[in-house]
Image (tube, rainbow over all chains, first blue to last red; front, side, top):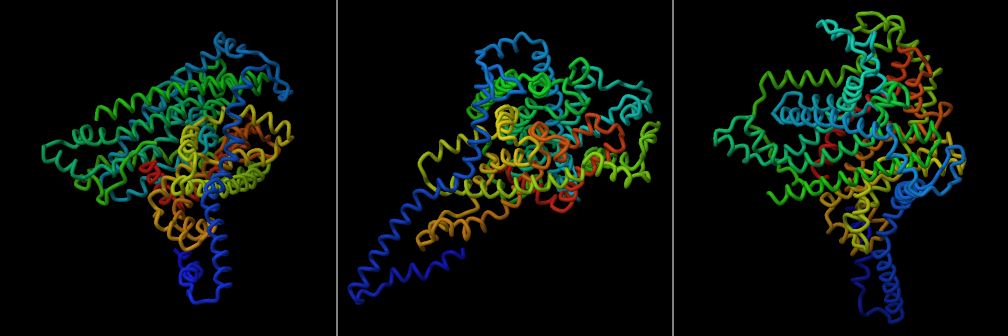
Length: 333
Length: 285
């Protein structure tokens, strides 16, 4: 706002230049105006690039280039000890991966933990958002409280949950003991450990997704509910027939984001047992963790790169599927 | 990425009145959200022996200060906190600045290649960090930046999400006529940025700043590769604790508490704004 006021004098001086002024001054003013307009034209043309330059410089150096270079490195044999020496290996890292049982194990674990964490998380978030959409007392308190886990880091949250799930003295087993259930060895079982790891993810992200859904619900026009109520629809029917259809794009968005998050899951399985193997028999080792083990414990950076690019390809595939689903949804509307 | 129409002025679901059930469920989930954090503080306030008893402690003990002190010095949490404040602060300032400049350009200026570049930004917004660690590791090995803070700061300085967030905000919040009027009045680009764009973008800059700070504070994968326990960030120090650096459970919990407390304080102060920012980003993004 202020700028238009501040620079107004110079502009009006140019425009209101009295014609009866002396000729040399007029010419000088004319030249100055021409120079200025040239300068402004250049400014308008190039300033956008100047504005995006800082971002794109960093983006190119630390985002785009490493992404592509990881692909290049995945075609080489690279040791962690001499990371700058690369021997051409063709597709060896990939073919080796396909024959590697730990890779398939990690892929499967990533998939099951992804399902176990994403599905309940999003369902609960939908329900909670619906409740928060009522006219509530202390609505903001509930929102902030449910978002607090989002502020807790993966590391801190996992350390706490690992303790809660402790076999001998953990609070979960103690609570189960109160209702007569024997102690569960959460960490060493396949399903129990994957369930436990999933609850960490659920705990951290449910509140966040609740807010996303709540925002979308608040933009559903009120008359849709009113006419549904007039038609005698119960609350539950309103939820199913009005809320859910209106939220479709948002639901798809959260599914995409959660899928991406689940594919790269790393910190939770690393710190739940404190080891890069993800349990004694790799029972909750995810792809992200397997990459870390291959690169930084087995010293094979080339293999780690191949795992990274496999993750990337999986994500592209998933993205394509979602894209097609989104288009179908749009058409059906 | 989804396009949802902006909220109409009236609140939805006004006619729905909550019953006791609603409150009961919400209270239950609130307790579930807060309990692990409260329990972190409880566990950090006992000694290790008490944590190995049944039933587990449900109220605070007297050992909190001792445990915090051990975590602060032996687990290097003191240095980690100072480092993390520096890292997250630098990352936040630069991310917000770069994102506002680029977001403004994408929202309001016409230039060749704008759409292609914007698609590039959106397309790579969610590429996992795993896809860049190997080249970054090679780079810091070459530059001998291992264990130095710039190794974790520089890669975080530009955020595609930030650019997209600011663009979405400025498209609606900054009237194009205002920018054009400033131009007609002879303001050059830097002046427009300072006097037109920044004032209009301020609310979104604040929200993006808070979100970026939280993310930078909690950044995990790359720092544990680039740094060691000698010069850690909070997450690196916590990883050290989790991997048996110190076997004492109550000290581990004290460390987790120390590493989370600054963000919890920030949430207590600015929770409303952060909630608003996420919801706003959701509707527009």
